[in-house]
Image 1: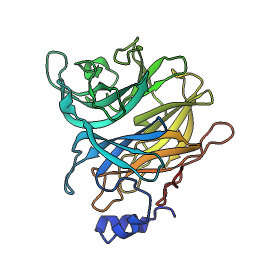
Image 2: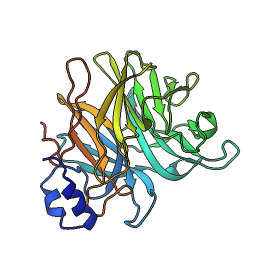
Image 3: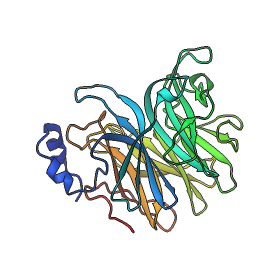
Length: 322
């Protein structure tokens, strides 16, 4: 069953939607408001790192104080491990906990986060990216550098102060790590083997309709760049491919339409136990909306030529796997 317009009306009025959602898989997290899904498959388990929306029903802006972690071994039942990191864990940071992603390398787990930098001797403030590290996917995580990995003054292609957000880290088969991020333009830089230092100059791209939220991965020798795009009135998801992690990126089209009852959408993609999954967020829970979002997952299918079929956003979600 597809999500219907009638359902959105019910959400907006707060009319007895809970029994219907109880029977459905989506959203997959219903006890708290979550956004910006970043799934990681490790040791036969899916770990899901999320933003945490805490804004009130009447709020007109984001309130996001920490990052949460969930896990599942069947894609149906999700365990809430609670908050594992917050901007307060970084001495240089201030403000909210925006989109983040975790990458594993050599048994260590690197938690790349977007937040804001204090006004100090190093930066005049603005969005910044930090990295924490742990020996387990569940932490405890601690600041790996003692300073921001990226801060606003390091990128000058956009005039606004929040363009350094939404990190996505990809480690290629040859061991080279890359970090992608941005709002208004896509930025990329290589990382050193220690995953906490830049390795070269920052590169800039302008994929068609790009806004934010990049997700980069590799499948059968082809590199995929998936991102939140302009859409018509609200963000949707589009994607591009390349023969190199450094581009150039060939635009491939729309991957997912705008999410119900949410201005933003944020992709996260994995292959798990032989199936491909597309994570995103919407605002369909009771009292939900653009600042009170909920993570959802649906199947994703590839064509023979490597292109991706448009994702169908459903209420049913996905089936349990063994």
